[in-house]
Length: 361
Image 1: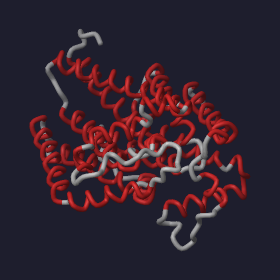
Image 2: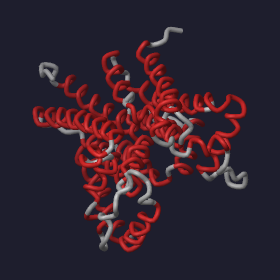
Image 3: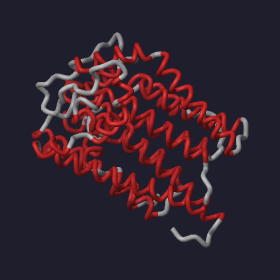
Image 4: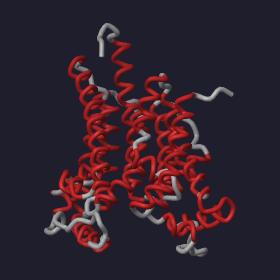
């Protein structure tokens, strides 16, 4: 069987990051909870099948007994690699496009945290599997859910239940759009209905959400090197008013001052800057196509906004108070967003090229 060279080099990159994390990065900072998972110190046999930490400890301990303390990371690296492959293979990319998207998925932070024994490696797996299913749905493949996709949903509910609202919203939007055979105006109405429901739910549960926001700082200790003082959730409804900034900084990671103070955060700052520049470039190109053709696909527009908003919003309480946590936790959905956004952009471009093949992009 012929192996695509780009996938082969991407796989080698994952192996490199695995050893880099173990022998270099671990000397600079801790590798999250990897050591506790490998030692099984957080294992509870009574709840390992529904508690993510206990499950990680169970498999970390079992695999380490077979493969040792170094190669124990390898199966988790394979898991994240497969999650990426499962979604990307559905995009029908040219070699040039494949090289570009795998390059974006080879940035250091993503490479390190998803190539070791970590919840992030598992997160990339189940988010990639779910995204593969979504791409099939968008292609109007009304197929049954496969066993591996049920497993992915099970892991999602155990590891990142806060992501479920994003996944459910995307699923419902795609299903309703096709079930009712909605045209653009119908999809726009559906999207606006989604927005109204979000605002209504936030308003109805605002007291509960406020209380939860006040408890979040208790989970972060100022003794941790990259923890910030809580200046974002001080008054009622700050969790909503400060959401735009909080969503951005939780995803981006270190601020300029933090990057200047700590060299390791400077690297994360540069990486995040490159990611944001690339995202801005593709959003600008998509906007240019819309303005040039005076046509907008409401399905793709809606799915982009639903995915980005929900994933960043549920991520922001866990990442805004600590730059390191923000970077590490974002890796759970980083691959999902990269592949999904690239797919939506590619579909926009393809449709326009079909309709107006005389336009150059």
